[in-house]
Length: 137
Length: 137
Image 1 (tube, rainbow over the protein chains, first blue to last red):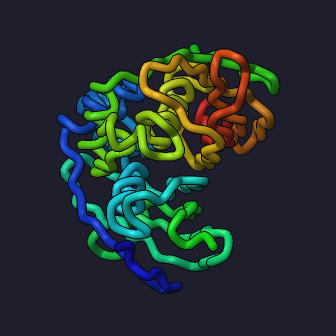
Image 2 (cartoon, chains in turn brown, yellow):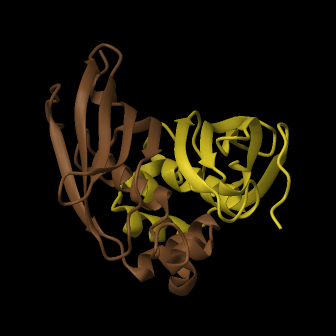
C-alpha cells in the first residue's frame, strides 16, 4: 500500500560525500574539474578546498523522492537546483524535501528540495515536481 | 587562456549509460528504485524496460559546462531540469548546451541544456546559469 500524502509532509536524509564518491561522480558525469579532485589546486581557488559537484549534492533528492517521499513508483517530472554555497568533501549535509502542493486528480505533487549544513545554512535550494500514479483519479 | 564566449556557442557530448553506471549512481544517490535496477520489474511498468535515473542523465551537463563550455573555472549557479521522456540503459543520447545570454560585466552566462535521442527527440530540457570569473569586469 502506498502512503497517504499531505501538504507539509517532509522527509530528510543526512549524507557526507567522500573523496571516493566525488571521484566516482567525476567519472559518471564526465566532470573532472580540479576544484573537485585536486586538493592543492582547490586550495588556490575562492573555495580554499575541494568541493563536491553541485549535481552530486542535488542527486540526494532523487534518493529521498524516489524511496521516501512520495516514494517508489513516483516519476520525476522536474527538478530545479540553485547552488547557493559550496559543499565540501567530508562535510555532513542534510537534504530535506517537503510537499507544498498536491493536485489529487492529476497525481501531481510539488515539493521544496533543500540541502543545508548542520547549522541550518541553505547550500542548495530547489523545487521538484513528481507524477504520483496512485493519486491519479 | 580562456576562450571567448558568444551567444550561440554550443558544445555537445554523446553518452550511453550502462548497467554499471546506473548501479554506481544508485549507490551514490541512494535511489535504488527497481525501475532502474530490476529488468523484470521494469518490464511491468509504463516504461517496459529499465530507465536511467533522470539526475544521472542531467549530470551530463556538469561535464559539458565544467569542461567544455564555458569550461574549467566556471561556477554552477542554477540548473533546471525537465524530464520529458525516459532514457533507457544502453541507449545513446546526445547532450547539448548553447549560450543564450552573457552579462559581461557580471560574468553571468545562461545556457539551454538539452538531451535528445539520435532522432532529435528531446528527452531532458533545461537551462543553466554559470558564473564565469574571467568575464567579470
